[in-house]
Image (cartoon, rainbow, N blue to C red):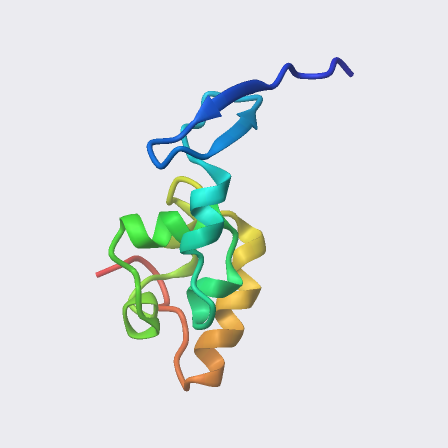
Length: 101
């Protein structure tokens, strides 16, 4: 398998990082803004951004979505579902059955 060339980037906050893709997200900025607790802290940066970009920042809001709805979000993958399912269950909530209202 060929090795991808990494390109040096500098974000608007002045962090220097290297990426092999055109993805503009600075990994240093993402790590700095990762929540220390709560259900969003359980997720990878792409999954967390997918929820945040769709206004899903509370468990109550998350519970209004079905698993199928979430899997349609760019950056959200199936490996995040078990973590979210558990967080919802711990708070007496669950994913919506069927499509988002």
